[in-house]
Length: 93
Image (cartoon, rainbow, N blue to C red; front, side, top):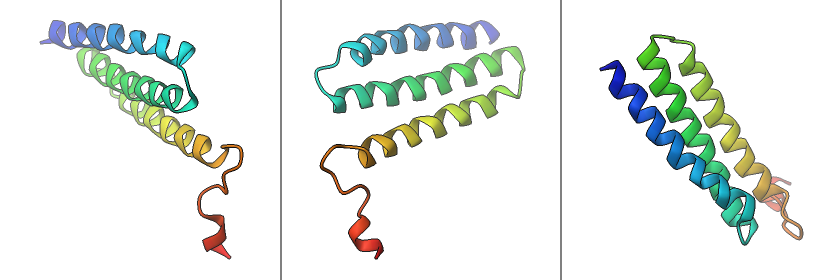
């Protein structure tokens, strides 16, 4: 079963690595953001698979941290777009 976890982790790592090309050479900021989200999700999946295969329970914390950082990156992109009003600031008043 350990071989399955490491094999699945390697497959996810290869497929997530292909998203890196889209991240670097994406045509627009939305494509780049989606690729960054995929890298965060794929990194979390890799951490969970390798952590489960090797028995290191701390990898669950690493996976949660990667998912949290990917979510914050998406919020930062939405709030930081030029010309946007951020996340509904006019409703906060």
